[in-house]
Image 1 (cartoon, rainbow, N blue to C red):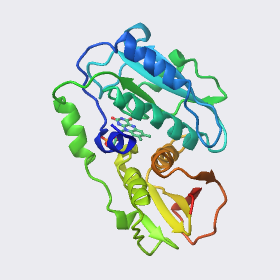
Image 2: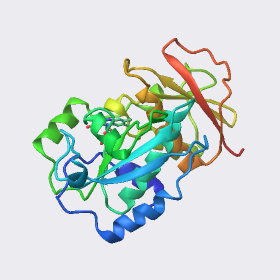
Image 3: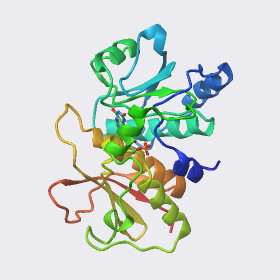
Length: 262
Ligand SMILES: Cc1cc2nc3c(=O)[nH]c(=O)nc-3n(C[C@H](O)[C@H](O)[C@H](O)COP(=O)(O)O)c2cc1C
């Protein structure tokens, strides 16, 4: 599968078949983790943890034997950088037939943080189970997907804009169309899809429409990192952070710009 196909076919997997990840797949994953970078140049450290050995579980996950956690130094853009890096792992795992679910909430955070050895100076935004999907989703998983409308996505006209945040974007460029579709299909916390993109010339300005409040840090910044990862995986480009000063509602925050080749 190419990257676009991986993005199109990936879904959160919460019901696993109980098999351990094979040694061969574990080796491939471990090797791949050493190659992951992000355009913020903020290091993300991954830690694989056997569920039984470390006493790890999640009330929404079934049949898993392995978890992966990631740690990032606290600081500006750390959540976006984390999202960007962790999503690469998610897509690579899927290329091996290994399912994942981003988990920020439905876990005993203190247990995962302890077992992953998270320092005071670090953030562990999310974890994920790793394993082979079961043939059928559990009733709990099906109910959850329905409750959060996990298969629905906002249409293009609500997400992608031309010049400012009011005019819908239309583009004939097949690469950009795929890159935008890759953003639209991305996973996000509670499937809120906070990403908004404004095109000006070759610059694609990414905005976060805040819709989850509370918490010590902003989980939707992780979503923004995922969106940037998907866009750049398809369209390439260069990431910069320089607010273009486009008029935006109070709940909509400038995050970053991707400039693609003309
Ligand atoms: C940053 C982030 C945090 C998430 N946290 C949780 C979580 O705590 N528990 C959970 O079951 N799913 C969680 N999800 C998964 C989303 O609910 C899921 O991606 C979304 O509903 C879309 O479904 P899909 O991934 O199958 O496309 C999270 C996703 C992201 C990106």
